[in-house]
Length: 197
Image 1 (cartoon, rainbow, N blue to C red):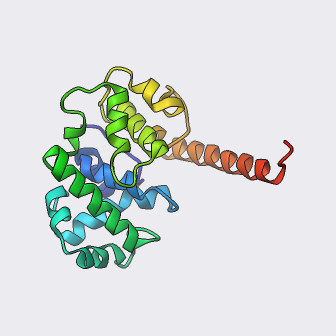
Image 2 (image 1 turned 30 degrees about the horizontal axis):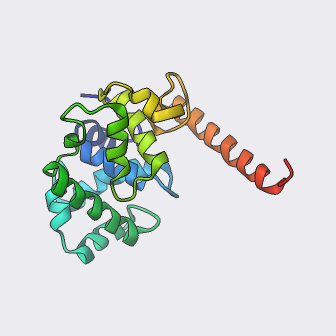
Image 3 (image 1 turned 180 degrees about the vertical axis):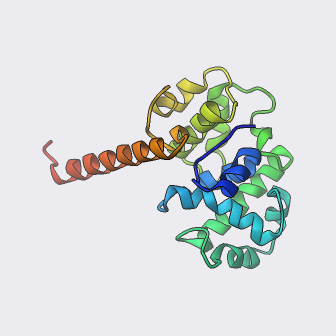
């Protein structure tokens, strides 16, 4: 079992390490929200549902309004609890319909890295960038290394990079990833302000 330290909280990271659905939901929530809180949210979700491991079948079958209430907390599981509850439920429904409710079904048949990326990209709420980051996270820290995964993950798959959640292995790497993201934001902002550049 991997020993993830993304949420920087022992109970949350323990769940992420043993429950692929928790990891997938954390990745889903990692958008316009602090990374540690996004990846800490599955632990809160499991606690509020009174379970030790998240179930795609259970979340898929929940009353949508009840799930929104669970996401609202307090504390809220995301800055946009309503829309993210809906998106999490859509992801769980897709897993139930296509992969028997198991996140591991995405890679159980041994697809190539490119094929796994395509499957991730087909999940609700997973655009190209998020899918590449999650593929890199699976490859670098979760032991899911289909042929060609690094190439499919692009720059996120680069060994030793500090670009994303895939590279967080402790407090120091978290600081380095944050610094990289800040540099990217500054560069994008500068590019917008200098259209001739």
